[in-house]
Length: 370
Image (cartoon, rainbow, N blue to C red):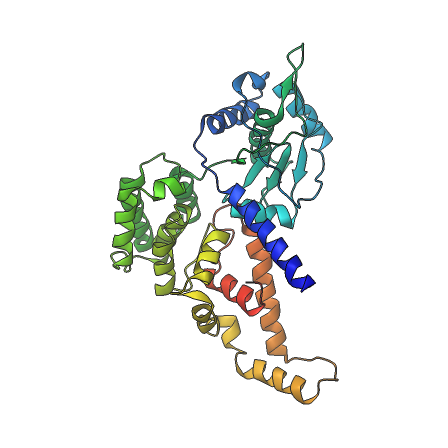
């Protein structure tokens, strides 16, 4: 009973944190942070003049303590923002990555705390510093108070507001696919151009892709075209772009339809919310996922034969040292390598993660992770 209570409390805390992470990203404060980060990259100073106050976010319960910014970067940020940033705390561990993934962001800010997705915290690169500068702007918006000399001081302040994070824009998603598919065959590029035109006609050229936008009639009607099979003949990369766009818009029915038609579609935008939707769905669920499991190439070599051999050996000789065939061990290693690549790819450069969505889902289900 005690274990059940602990598990339930942990689950409730996780759901509460996830709920805080689902925020509207198109705000005045978001635009301010983007402008300030660009100005930081150009070497401009007194960037606090570009910011206005925002409600402090609620704390992320159960988060680790975090650590300070690297000294050299801290000095740069403090000088250019005309601010005291000693209170800022960085979170770049596995827990932070999971929270950022739930927010659908490379990074997000809650009070003085900045949480980074896997691979997104890069304090020694230009793009990494721009992202940090963007999130530091959110820390100052939420927590800073100015002294008599105009210096802003970040503080350990929390409230009841939503977390702040950089938005997914259609331009960013499109650009990522276009960059990473250079050199592909012409037919694939033509299909990518077709679906790009179709999506842009619905969402616009510079729009932020949000759940709110996903509720608009034009997007809902577009999803209906998807689920009727109108785009099934497009190349895999074009359908991947379509699936990822629907995922960001939280049109999960359309994304799931594409995945069921091709379980090995690749993704550039892993989504924990989509995975949960799929696994918990009465239409799809764990039975569908486990049914596909055996068709994964690396698994197909050993499942069910080698798996059943190992199970039989355990049942007949439970006290003996666990063992497995080389083929089974190789498959396990391949799957673990995939998971490591998945975790490293979340929130980073497009197409870092180029494996099948369903492999990740199957692994999580088979290992009883949910």
